[in-house]
Length: 195
Image (cartoon, rainbow, N blue to C red):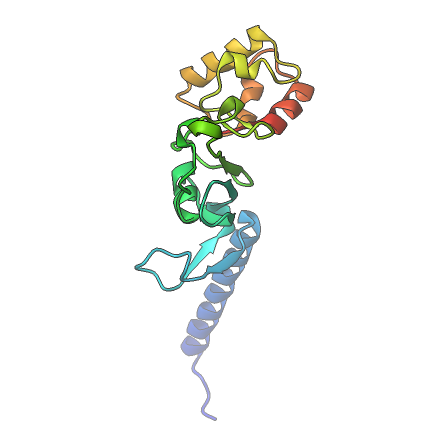
């Protein structure tokens, strides 16, 4: 084997050190972001992509249920709207009550999107959903909010004013910014509201 000159050894050494540094930086960046990469099947990808890698840090996973064609759990890009989730679930069924939900609300990771069904004679149940279902935060009235444990008429009015001042709400969690809502009230809100 021919001997390497001193300059060749220095060049090869520099290349090896550079590769080690780049590799260490990549490993550190992956650990810091907490992103694990998952292949998205072609059925969930846009038509132009047959295969793509999607980091979990940039996606939201939502449960779409109620009056949709294919209820289920779906992964969508961060920043998606309720309407995107409904379309991913095959669209609404003929008896859907779309006026009862805010289709423009941004999705939050882990959110459940409930598309209510029309009640008898085309009327939706209380709060725009079936009697046991959650109330839509995007369309809830003061009277509907007042039915939630721990919410009185004043706090219900504050919630509606807060929602209107912020152009809607992406999640129930934002309500902790309203004065008069503490941890116990937030639990009641999570159980009874949907964005």
